[in-house]
Length: 366
Ligand SMILES: *Cc1c(COP(=O)(O)O)cnc(C)c1O
Image (cartoon, rainbow, N blue to C red; front, side, top):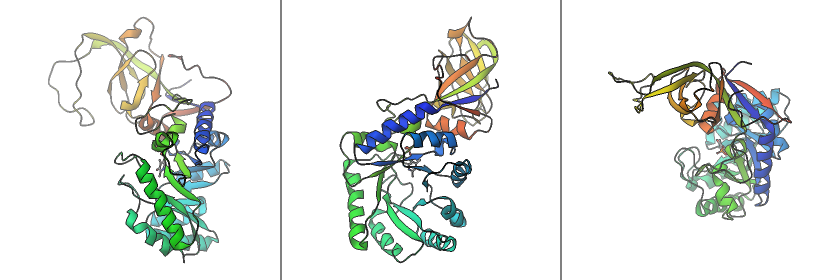
């Protein structure tokens, strides 16, 4: 078997999806499963659907095309604002998209009309995360301006929090979103299917009963994939945090000093790493690097510590494994969201899905 490999436990993903979907359902919230961190991996998306999500949402058209191309039939939503240059693809491949620009909405309307479709849109409102979204005082006017546009249908409004600026969902900003929805419904004499207030950062507020009843839709990625909410990265009760295990092979294993005295400049990535001197260590290099993974986001399962990284290597202090570890052994790592995203995106990391048989998560060496 060749390494590096990213093992994907589809049963655990399905289980996590079911836990999150049930939790949300008990608060009147439907869930779209977000697949962008797994590059629209069709088997992961299928596991989410088995777990009960009502649709798949992804930020990349290419990922939606990949899932559809694999024959995975589901309602698809584009999470990223459509580019004006690609509106025809958006309406062709996604039933719903998130939007904030009047000009893009007009272009989507024209594209949908050309294709004889009705494209559904969710208006994103910026409630302080300073990522996408119209400022709240302009959202009702934008909604009104959509009413005459054939080819698109206003499906709802939404907001994205805890991303760019870490602004957290609160009772008061969720109430504000619900009030904006009510105002749009009044002014435009329509009813909105979705008030999409949540991503994984909203689960604590929701579980604590702090969500206004009108918020009825969530777009959930990390809590399903990695079993964590995202305001404090706490594990969600009943979910697995280890549906993904990255494995890399030891390609050098040598005793070396833990620090080297001598002149130091910048490292390969412009950083100034500091190496603590605690004598000689058993030092292992494994065959993954910054090109494959966000090194700060990997945690070895074995008693080993990451001490350095380049584009192609991660260096570990494996002194605690002296006597057992050998060249060619495989070390396993748990991943955070950034590391998962990078490992899924790296063409050098083989993705290996399994289900129905339990991967032994205690294995340190394969
Ligand atoms: C990525 C994304 C999500 C999912 O966020 P998680 O924290 O992974 O649940 C939801 N909405 C939008 C608009 C996104 O881009």
